[in-house]
Length: 449
Image (cartoon, helix red, strand yellow):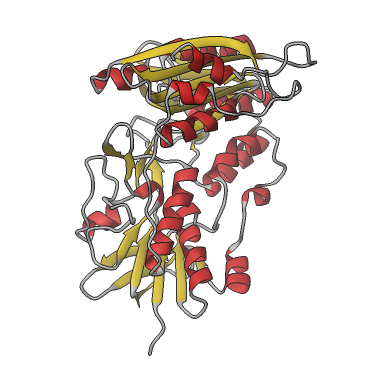
């Protein structure tokens, strides 16, 4: 009997999580991973900290190299190999070796598509000028890092006020640059409510970031040597010798679409709770695949490393013949700007209104740990509950170090369909250097009992 042959398209979080799970379950199966870039299993989320100087080398962002996967795990990780086509009836893929420029077909018994996402980059005049970067892969991060070291830019413009924009603003300030952030929305971090975003804007402005909101990017201008020198919006023109585009990402699902695999309205690959696609023997996972939102009751595109790893585990388990279900997402995320930690989970007020839900909110300010203990700081918690059953619907947290990860307790409460009373009475740990006797999230919950 021949060995089962697995092919994985994409060698980052979802792809390698799945491949590793399959290997743990089946030591004799043949597993090949094709990855377009030179790297596997790297932390794209760490790139702002590489650029900001907190991480000394790009090698530190690589969890496991292709060589490690080959030698230690017997997974044939093949970097610089791009899969161009999937032939579903014949169960084979067309692969191009990007070094030799040769192409070949490879057969599979089971296939995983884990092609990730690509950065949104509008077709605007001179957007391909030198010094303009999208941070989506480790390779792109290294390129930006090298450019900054060699060119020593002084004026940076960030387009987009989401997670990447906020993190890069901190990183570029650390490098001594003058930082301007432009966003088309009237407030940054649109995954939060405006009343919470205001505090982030205040912190960034106080740190020296020049915020220009409700402006639309229109074009760029480059100097004679091809380097960017101007960023132009519908309202202003800004000097720049470095530009970071943080305008979101889209699912890299075209190869699936061309093969006839069903996509969602978001262009993500449609999968069921076992990460199976519409095609037999083909699964999808990670940023290219859809996720069901438990509260919004619909399928969404959610590009997060945490979700990608879980997708990969679920896909790998089911490909191995071990049933596992992906339970869905609730939108839990966290970031920071200098000493301000920012986290959220569940629904915002806008999302609750759009769904027609009857809800109530409570917003409280407290200390992240005992006020008399040296170094204590502020924390702000906003909690959202269903008006009738008092089930927790969402939360947002801003605060000094030690504040942000409290969101995980609320996320667990939402996943468990707990009420404000349940959260308020939860048996949480207390010691003065780490918490208050009534934790801030419980103070907010008490207001909503």
